[in-house]
Figure 1 (cartoon, rainbow, N blue to C red):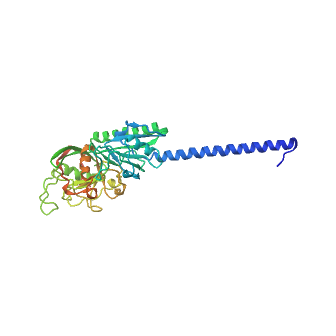
Figure 2 (cartoon, rainbow, N blue to C red):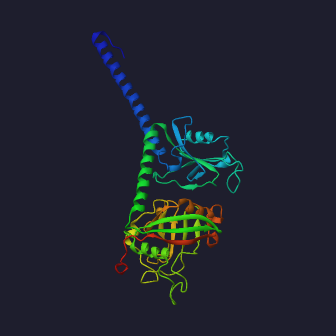
Figure 3 (spheres, rainbow, N blue to C red):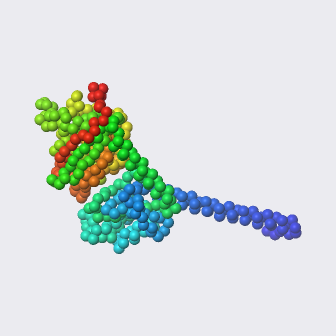
Length: 372
């Protein structure tokens, strides 16, 4: 195409200007698309769990990502690379491997000189993982002085302060919530002292939710106190006490549940099984430490309960939540670790974990059982 004369040159300038505007628009769109892609990637990488223990321990690996690090912890998540595929001399190398993979936001590294796991993975074995649950309230996995792994969760550096602020906000809120439960004189506060194979391991404190689960909370308050005495003849568990002293944690699944209780009927006035609390069935199994009734179906509740070792929503609306562990987490972890490495990650009545003393520190507002 030719442009001749003043008019032609004017048309040429207009065409060139139009092409320049089009090129600028296309460049701007590419930048916009790139920003949108990065923002989406950032949001995906922020879908992680963070533990309190690791909030102040940071590594700064190469690249635009930082990682919270926790020693003596093994995090669970979708496996991206398996340990037998990757070996690193330093924990920082394992962390960097995760940060360089857009799919990865968590990792676990064998820190023990003697190796880790039932297959004796050598020191330096590195697993990269992806955590998909966005809730910051808990992280699936196991912790304790005898856990030979170091683990981390990672997020973009440009979100570092907002993420850490969110973590700290959750920590503060959670501490305030637990303190509120401990200080609530209307709710019962009960305890269980535990031994494992004759070794005292400590005391757990539980607050019972009589305000939303009056049947279950009062039922287990009576089991903790033992105040109802002996099961009468002709009833389930006749001759045994309505109590928890001497009972074992008889069903323990690694990082899932620790179940205990008495093999008797309910000590509530109607005896036998007690009905589900509608309010307790509305509570979600959304965090570690919750107490949940163990039963065989609707309205078949009696003397068994479980401590939840993580959020398990498939229990929602099937089993009633009636309380929460507020102190003694190290004891709950010791009990649950009895199943680690066992066949099917489960142990039954031979756990050796026994409640040697149970009782009540605070009754709370009395429940009118005649109205249940």
